[in-house]
Length: 233
Image 1 (cartoon, rainbow, N blue to C red):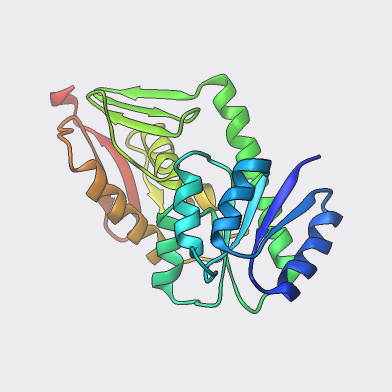
Image 2 (cartoon, rainbow, N blue to C red):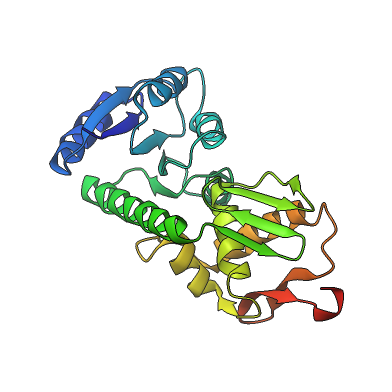
C-alpha cells in the first residue's frame, strides 16, 4: 500500500482530502503540525505530500526544506496566501506545485496525479541515462545533484531539473511557456514571472563558481537557452 501524507491542522480539510486520496487508491496518513509531518514522512515514506504552509510548531516551508534535503518525493503546498512571492518561495525551496485555499478537492487530486506522473516519467528517464556531463559540469538525476569542478552546488529539485532540461539540449531556445510545461506540467497554473524568478535564483547559485565554457543565456522576448562557448571547451 502506498501512502499520501496530508499535513494540515484543519480537520475539515484533512477529512475531505482523505476521502479523495482513498478514491485515488492511496492510504492517507494525517499530520496536524509540522513536527508530526516530518516524523510521519520519515516513518512511512509516502508517495507524495500535501503540505499546509501555516501549521503549528513548524510551518510548511520548514517541513518542505527538511524533506527535500533527503528526498525527491512530490510535494504540493496548500496555502491561504496566493501572492506571487509566496508561490515562488514555495517552488524555490523545492515544492512541486501549490494550491491556494479555498480549493476544490478534485483540483488537488488532479495536481497530485500530475506530479506523480512527472516523477514516474523522470524515474523511467533516469533508468536509461541519469547523468549528464558537459565540460566541468555534472547533473545527476538519480541523486538530484549538481556539481561544477567536482564541487556540489546545493540546488533544489526543480533547479536540478531545470539544468537537466536546458543542458540536455545545448543552444536550444526554450520559451517561458516551454519551461512551465516541461518543469511544472500542463496542469500548472503559473505565468512567465515564475520562470524568470526561478532562473534568477538558479543563476545566483551556479554563478558562485566559474564556468566560462557554458552559461544560461536570456533570449530577450523569448526565453532561455543553455549556451556553450566552444573556445573555452
